[in-house]
Image (cartoon, each protein chain N blue to C red):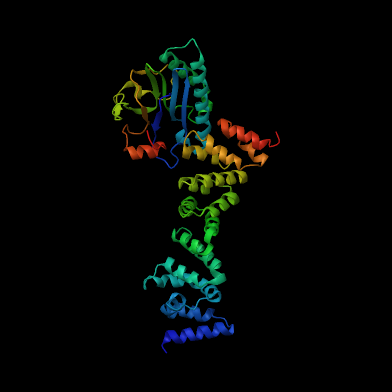
Length: 242
Length: 191
């Protein structure tokens, strides 16, 4: 039995008995990182949420050793996520914290969050200057759910603009309406005109169809009056009983 | 049908910032206008000046074309310019209209009259061979006009109207890009 097999046996035994494995992993990360990497993402990984949770504080340390194998961090995390069970969301959140600006986090997020990919990532970085670029990354991957979610939660134009920029007009307009509903002074109508051109009557009308809150409608009235069709729809939305 | 007018401005992630466009037809006359205003002040600050200007030209144009007494293209063009001059400058953004780039045209089946301000170049696409032709040489006085000057800046008369006219907004160098780039920057699929 070689050293890797012995370590693997000890680790499995401790996990089976419910004993803490943090100290053992910590020691491996320092003394035998190749063994640690092998048992976590090798041909026969141990896997399991307990192991992933115990690895979270060691990820920076492990990453520094990855280059010598060589394994790219994204491949390490994708492989680790495969066997992480319930701990995969914690893994994603930790990785987002470590690599908020990396485009490959979007792929990991897609693997872990599925159709909701991007929710955690975008919400974590919404105050960063690269928020819009990351919205574009998710828009390019067709992850409209997370962009709609962020537009609604944050009242920001970026998710809508990313969707519009990627040619998904309907979702972009929906996201724009959600942003306006949350924050009527977010500038969505101005950005729509700056992106699509002076005649935004039709897309603006589609956007207004999604807005029902009278207070929101009142706040955007001065921006809508310039577009005849949108103005008609605004009136209909504002006074639905007439 | 009103002559399609387009204007190229400096590249931007939000290419139509401060952009306006008008096409009005009544009887055999039409008015077309396009351009940018308050572009450098940003997406949000440029929006209302552009809308106000567009709406003013649109309503003035229709009003003038409907006036049975007016039948000269140049006269309509001059009156339209006077109408623009009368716009309260505070409605035209932080720079009060001094940053305008505009091409304004009035036409009928006999030809087109156009004037401009804040423009560095003008091209027309020929109906016959679909090629782009320079409408005015680079040093023409028409390209020396900037802002909304009180005196009418002068008109260019074109007897045979091109299919489309494209202008370049100052400070853009007067040069047309490839057809593909033109389509993408103007937001059109064909010209």
